[in-house]
Image 1 (cartoon, rainbow, N blue to C red):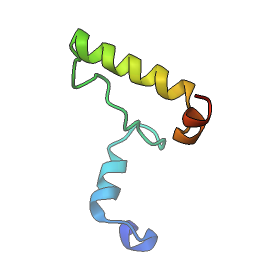
Image 2 (cartoon, rainbow, N blue to C red):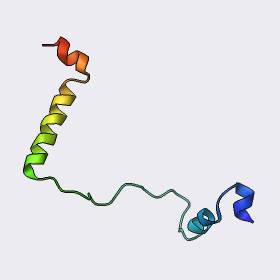
Image 3 (cartoon, rainbow, N blue to C red):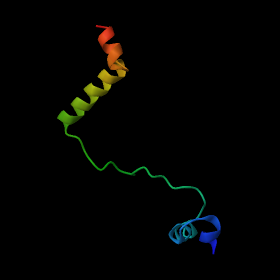
Image 4 (cartoon, helix red, strand yellow):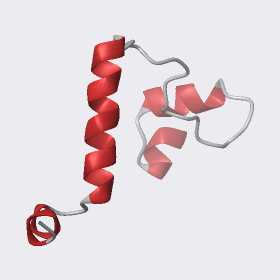
Length: 64
């Protein structure tokens, strides 16, 4: 059996036989599952800009 020969589960062989090509499929979701409120988005943007400016806590403390 093919699964035994290559050390795969039968389910994996079955899944790959249904595919049109041999390339792995993306695991990234096609849509975001959550939506942020404007307030949450503002907090996220502020944190991102702060963290990008100071790559480490040590560098931020030193520059003060």
